[in-house]
Image (cartoon, rainbow, N blue to C red; front, side, top):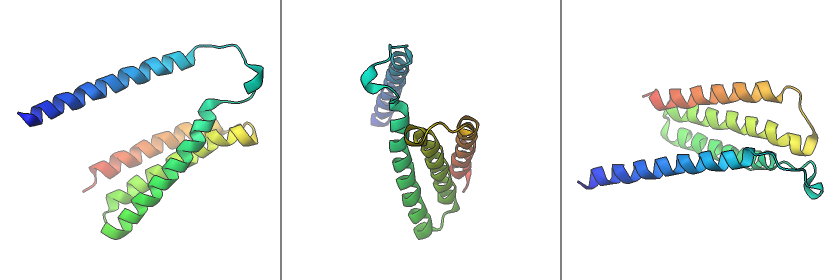
Length: 125
């Protein structure tokens, strides 16, 4: 009985998280007037730099786990985190280094390859 209760709690938390993210994304997407104090400052690019550090840290941890265990699936997960780190760096670099003309198609491609790498890492035995 507790297993079913745990699944129900997990499902409710999952649905609540999706709803909150959806509402939060909708609120952030609303156009707001430009504030002269924050001219040129883009929060999503700052968050991308934070994501870069997190993804790089997770790739290092998963690579160390791969070296210890020898499970090749961890190598694919580490590769996915590295790709996400590169993607986040490209987006975040625009905050400090200016616009990069090829960033959008490259980041979308890196997202796709990272998802495939995660998928393969999960399926590989």
